[in-house]
Image (cartoon, rainbow, N blue to C red):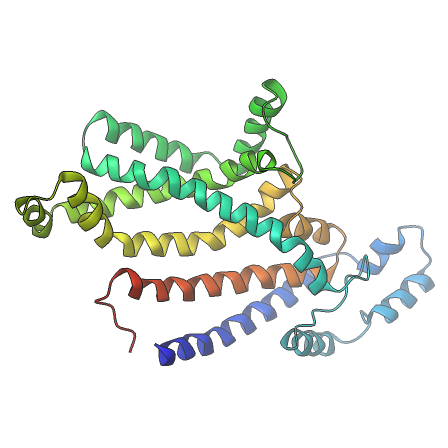
Length: 306
């Protein structure tokens, strides 16, 4: 196990290095001068040049890249060009809100998708199956940048049941979590249905019923448990996608998280903050992939890492 973990961690180093290089390159290819954006269009060329020199933006890109990598290795991602706040501090300040939203969205997705997928597999070809399939198609087809405003119009503006924006109580979390988790719930329900349906055809399920196990026990204890590997894989991979989708959802609902911070940073050409936010999302992807691999051994004891 330790050898497997060390090998996987070592493999993440070139991945993160590639992500950092790509992010740095693309950010500096975006048109616009952050010094000009900070000072305004009426600023004199001399003031702009002085600010660029103070921020180190007049240095060669290779030198800027080297300073960025060395700082990232030490956990120092620089300072925001707009607020002069350390990038790490700004990200840590917004991180709890984003992970709270992502966890709530995953909870919504799992709570709806798993029972729906199991029911569709058990009652295959019935109205339950057709209804679950229809809901899954709707969830996949409706983008969250359309679903979010629709939910806000219905439940906040028309009915007045829930707040439309901000973060505070659990009520502020409902609409963003549903908006973000709907697509994942649809994908997860279809995956659960397909894997459970495949396991229900196996002989060990019939043998469990023959030994006196109830239908519910045979489905949940045997068929569903053995179908968890692809389901866990999907949940782990989609957690990173949830963080990415939070960029849109947080903007719609004014949720003070990493996604909204990223959009604001792009608008102000705040290179260090943009790089820090994207690196956090990349690290989260890698960490979730590693955690997913480790979960395999807990779910299926037949899997050995060495």
